[in-house]
Length: 338
Ligand code: TRP
Image (cartoon, rainbow, N blue to C red; front, side, top):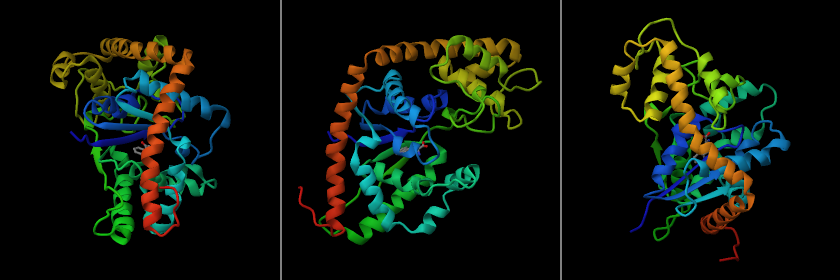
């Protein structure tokens, strides 16, 4: 049976945290059972804002190791590094020339990020969503699992494929690009910052105490949870808009303990923070322990990791080259190699 294809990726900027795991990687792990899955470490995206060359390669490697440690299976999925597949940059250029500038200027994430960057906004930052469209379209992806904040980027990828490529260059016999669908991840899996329950947990937050990194040791996890923002009400509850922190911490607890929200609500209805926080730290520590053990094994045996990434690279290269050639031929490039 023909399986649907899935593609996704995360940037290698700083250590992945529980928001990346619960909001993204955990879903890929499930999806790979019944889909042909491609996941990449998007290092080309990581240089759209100022980056440190001393850490980029190391973080790219450790991000790939964390995908595996979280349960991505190289027998079932292709795991690869974006910058090692030349077709991403090449298709990005072609799409750049076919995408109207005013589509880009309305991208919300660009506006937000460029305000933070001040005078130092690169063309790459504006182009970020076109590169993401190239990532997706190269693999004829049916489904793209992304968080709510990436929905606009996915719409853009669909518009580029449909209106700018297929509508203009496809023939009756030959449709050029597959138009992908977003797979928006369930609300409960969106993990918020520990220091502000109205903001998404983020690698770029300057305060390390706003997030739990997947490689944080137990004592640091406990310390971060102790310091996490709370309120002065007694009794913990979900879904009270005035208590975003309560909702967030209960939701992390519910996901990691495997107890349904209903059960957690009852368990914590009369509980104070002093009693709840140690429980939460405990489930976090034990949920992260197997990931940390697997990660250490992988990092200590670089040859195994290299083998997995080489296998992913070969598969990604093969598929992406075919799509790229289809696009190049259809827009009129003189193409020799297929
Ligand atoms: N922009 C995505 C994010 O921040 C990362 C990303 C890059 C991506 N290319 C992708 C996600 C392709 C899905 C598919 O989460």
